[in-house]
Image (tube, rainbow, N blue to C red; front, side):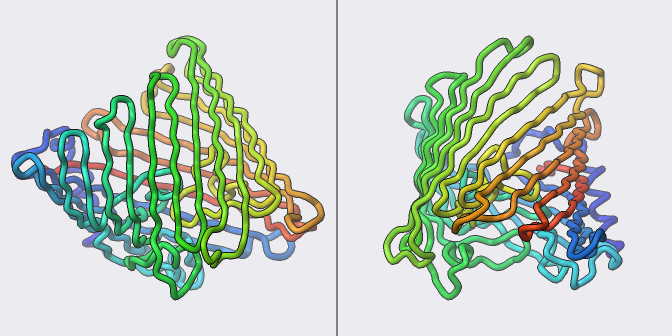
Length: 407
């Protein structure tokens, strides 16, 4: 263990000189060293937070990408690892944090291994790779991201539009080295079905980016997601933003997860000036069913550290304020506070406990010789209606991360 920590410290100091290098004729070799502490503590009875999940881990990844061969072909491979650090923070019965396995054990994973080909502004990739889309994504908020066995193409040949078409067959979760089918990740044990996804990211105007994505999981459901964001005002003065998000999700085929037809819609307003940013938004979910989200972080703006506010019939309000300290001479230091309030019906099939969450996020990006190094500290307090089965709790995350390029 001491050897591993020494290796991580070396990686965090030696590559500084190489962090800004251009890709060499032999390809690129990049990596990331990460140390992460995570705890979630909930109340079970009384006033004590006696239900504990806790982990402290070190690890990261190393990735090699070939140069383009004959201008058309290439490949990439990446290994990921996470290892427990200090037994006192990694009790076997306090796992489930997502940093390590469910029993706080480490692992090594071949997270990426793909072949790629391109023509003009179109690129195709096959097999293990990272994917970042609204409902299928890396969810990289622990030690290692989710990665996928997928086959597809992404094209920017049409001006102002990026089109993506993929068949996603399997997924590796954040707490394991194993890839399983997308249907099994969605809770259908013993099945082997993937997801066909198609998306369009369109930016006909600089201040109006628009996204349309559809995910079809055979015999399970179809999910359609839309997002429109309009910004106006002066970037150096007062500026504004309006974000609309909507999702429609319904069962299809054999309806292996049951029959449902549901949706969610939300609007977020933003005002920024003098380094400050203020957000106010609201969302509402259909009464018939909650929104299933099995393959990545939830794309709605009200997705907090613990709650996504996507239960059946849930109405949520979000308030946020952020400040960038660059104006005070502390470049790279940011602070934001978010509060979310979720309300569900008191009776009927979608009745559940009301819940609130309060987040504090602190971040610092180093510059100069330490460029690539960052510190993130996040706090969450969850306040749920105990009379209806809710549980209060709090969460703490502390992450030290260094991104580097060796070649």
